[in-house]
Image (spheres, rainbow, N blue to C red):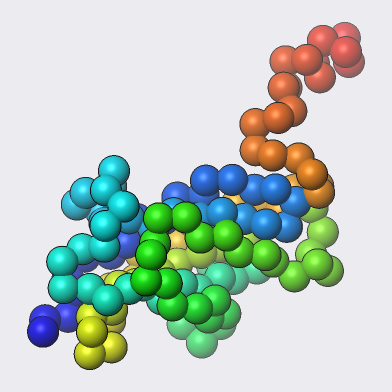
Length: 129
């Protein structure tokens, strides 16, 4: 069984307070919900800070996922809104051998109860004028 050759694609689907929903997909078939052939799942990692670290030891292991289509993660309740959270992942095969890690993607923690896209900046600008 060969080591996975591709990196997963990570998308932030939604941020609702401290719950971040991610999607992992095959970089070669990003619209498919299937994992790449020969993979058993993906290992997902997070990091809180302004710049993602190069050292893998600085990342927090969030878990292994076998169904990468929609993954809700709840971040630490002590994190304040506008805190930057980074994510990276790699595919692994049935023997546990891992492929390359994806380029990190980030999002910001939001105030509780607000979904991505619910604040209309144009409305806020009109009220301020």
